[in-house]
Image (cartoon, rainbow, N blue to C red; front, side, top):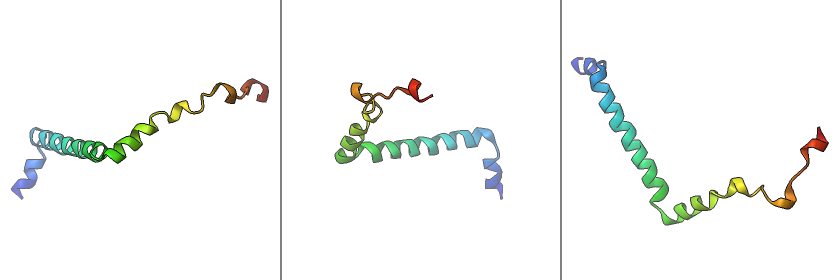
Length: 65
């Protein structure tokens, strides 16, 4: 049970947590940008917020209030 006491010390768990989170982050980055098909699909999503900003599509919200 001595090894469980090792986890209770912050000087041991902080570097371990840093390594776990860093490996998780690198795994997500590799998953997202590792495939060219997935990368192109995600790049096409970057313009989604601007699709509603067409000049003729604006509704007058003042009239509806």
